[in-house]
Image (cartoon, rainbow, N blue to C red; front, side):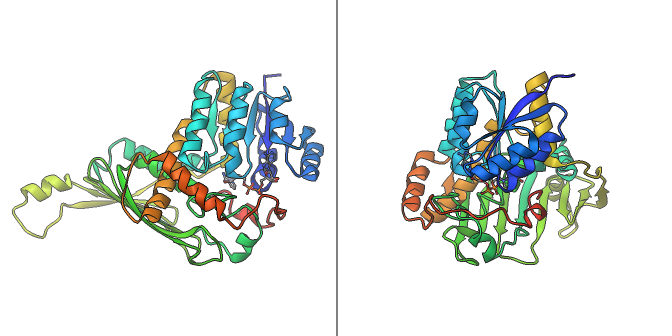
Amino acid sequence: MSKKVKLGIIGLGNMGSAHVDFVKNTSTAELVAVADHKKEKADQFAEKSGAKAFYDGIELIKSGLVEAVIIATPHYDHTPLAIAAFENGLHVLSEKPIAVHKADAQRMIDAHKKRPDLKFALMFQQRTDEAHKKIKSIISAGELGEIRRVNWIITNWFRTQYYYDSGGWRATWSGEGGGVLLNQCPHQLDLFQWFFGMPKKLTAYCQFGRFHNIEVEDNVTAYLEYPNGATGVFITTTGEAPGTNRLEVAGDRGRLVFEDGKISFRRSEKPVQEFSDTAKTSFNTPDMWDIQIPYPANTGAMHQKVIAAFSEAILNGTPLIADGEEGINSIELANAMLYSAWKGKAIELPIDSLDYETILKEKIAGSRYQKSVVEAAPSADFGKSFGK
Ligand SMILES: NC(=O)c1ccc[n+]([C@@H]2O[C@H](COP(=O)([O-])OP(=O)(O)OC[C@H]3O[C@@H](n4cnc5c(N)ncnc54)[C@H](O)[C@@H]3O)[C@@H](O)[C@H]2O)c1
């Protein structure tokens, strides 16, 4: 029998419980331990999977039973658990976001740097989506020419007050460290930096509890400036229905739009800047060709692909889907947007991560959530949204 990575899952809530099945269906991994603070959950999933139950993540990490862990706890715990895992010689696949704030992400990366023999991966399963892969390859191949403007309106993350009321840690400064930017949007923020790199500066307007009775942001508009002069707008909310998911990229060779599952490319026959600089007429544009970009249908579960790549990387040294160190970019974008809204001004990147942490600690001190609050059971309709 071929070798399998001995895996443990820490946190068996909405996401971690789904990972039990994803691991079961991964030929290169074997679930040998599970942990949750809620004893009944740990026991239930241990019985279901034949794994050993632990009632705390650190106990699982120190057990000597596993070679690698999947961390699927609320975000604040990603940092101490990942650091403990590296210190105990374990490979780490952490759920998104890497951490609540950049300083914590850096602490995880620093712990990993001491053990470069270990793999550090992140659950950014949206990178396996065939449409996103196609967009990435079009941009990387230079098909759009130099990027001039990027816009993502990602407002189809509608959530009800019932959703926010059902999970104690959610949408609180002390439990989650943010709202839509920390919970729903890490995927799009990761894709944004994967496609376009990091901006040098941004200004964001965040509304806190605009559509829900929550203390964190549920409505965000950010304006970004890139080193080459390109500009970007990122808009997100959990309060809008019907929502929009529209990515628009304008480059020197035309415009790409991804919406409703279609990648449309209006390609300019000539470079737009050159046409503008040399035209002898006032209002003409270059000739355009309309192209519908085909891409393969998605097959298989995206989360499982990340777990399979993680275990194969451990066994054979093959590439990860999303490297741990890259996770700092999406959390820096999320933090910079909140930081800009708090300070009421434009923020240069890289942000002052320790000042950000200090302000966040003040928010935590005044937060309505106390860790002793008993959390509700996973929502029955969780599966409808988790793949997004
Ligand atoms: N990749 C995705 O598509 C996706 C989707 C949903 C959630 N997530 C991420 O997964 C993480 C968990 O989210 P969720 O919705 O499953 O939360 P949840 O509240 O449903 O579950 C979290 C579980 O972790 C347990 N836990 C907390 N700290 C622990 C510790 N130190 N040791 C052991 N158990 C501990 C809790 O008891 C709880 O059962 C979050 O970081 C979230 O962002 C990712």
